[in-house]
Image (cartoon, rainbow, N blue to C red; front, side, top):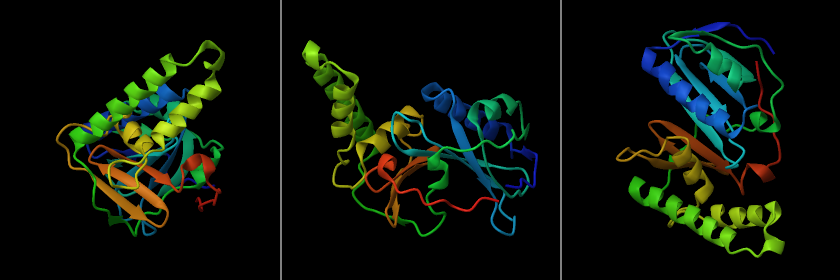
Amino acid sequence: MSVPVRSLYFADAREAEDLTAFLARLLHYDRAAAVRLQAGSPDGAQAGLAVFGRPPSFEVLAIRTARLGAPARLDITVSAGELLENLAGEEFLLPGPVTGPPWTGVLPPRGGWRELPGLPGVDEMREAVAAAVAEFRGRDEQLPAERSTRAERDAIGREIWSRTLAATPLPLRAVHAAHSLGFLRPEVPVALLSTGSWLRLRTPFGSTAVRGNGLGGLNVIPTRTR
């Protein structure tokens, strides 16, 4: 893998602050988290950075974009913790590459997305997440002592978070992740997009994406890195 740049510049300080908050949330769920960074079109003309992570509690991909001050081209997987340490301002150094977990080879395509109908408003989505969390806690508390195991709780969680949102095919886990990562804020525009077997919940603050029946059951099809 070759990395043509060793440092990047954000368009402004707000971009650095937003990416810092995203990385901190990822590390809250996984202190050893890795993120895959992609920037630029094949001709290097686009000045944007996409950061992909996978919080293990949700089995979805989380995507945060940031505007760069100058076009760059890269595709690299790095430690989220090391990247966070390097974000001290509008300019930051890239950490050295790491061997990424399998999900880093299964990213959604960049193009071909179409919007799907039926997505409820942000308030309804937040209420759906709150109701699901309350149901999980209630069912967990009602488990008899002999069944109060990690496996039993995981089974309850899979059943609840695999349910779809309203009349859409989007699993609740994608909404839960968006809410927990700070993407699903009141009164923001949201959209449900699809391409192939992928679904994506897009907000101005970030996206969550799922494929098929969740990332845990994916066949890993590596994407090319440079």
